[in-house]
Amino acid sequence: MKKMIMLILTATVLAACGQSDDTSSSDSEVVQPIRADLNVPEKGDTDETVTFKVTVTQDGKAVKDADEVKFEIWREGSKDDSEMIEANNMKDGAYTVENTFTGKGIYYIQSHVTAKQMHTMPKAKINIGNAQASKDKTDKEQGHHHSQTTVKFHPPEKITADESAAFTATVSTKQEPLSAASVTMEIWQESDEKHDWVTMTEQNAGTYQAKTTFKNSGTYKIKVHVKKGDIHYHNVFKINADKRQ
Image (cartoon, rainbow, N blue to C red; front, side, top):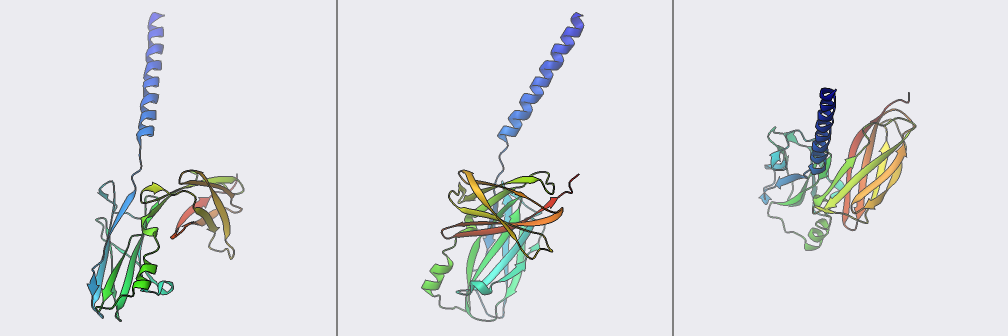
């Protein structure tokens, strides 16, 4: 009988130790933000191929499997006519594109990096053909600060059609929580002509939440929009809604 009691006590102590270790590990886990270092030459010549590179890291380690990396290129004062080019993955944390400029001017290069459920958009400019920059236009182009804005999007682990699902977005700029922003989710399926819009409500500094219900099962796209002052961020995420049992 004494042996049986000792075995029960030992098992209880071991189980308690195991629970304590798991809790400690979970509480101490901190997700580090991704970092994107954009490399753009200061000058270039017309009709000459120029290479742009962005190096993506997390906690000092190369991110070799970013979900998406694109380069957006536009001429000063013509942001609405920008061109988006998908980057080449060099498999060492670096992503590159090559571009040839046919006319003189100041051009802006912005890399859109999505990795580890985070997004960042560093921006730089290049002078092609020793063009004269316009101060007014340059100041206007530099007015948007999405390059320092990141969003961690947290969908539920399981989403079922016709059942309410809760989403969370953690927004930061300059590595500080972004409060009092307008954060919305634009939701649609490929076959949808009309997109649904859901407003996210701030729960605490930089953390926004919303609930919504998906009528149909299948793959949905959710574009998270963040607006505050000069900040205008957006990024698209994919989720799957399962059929209701």
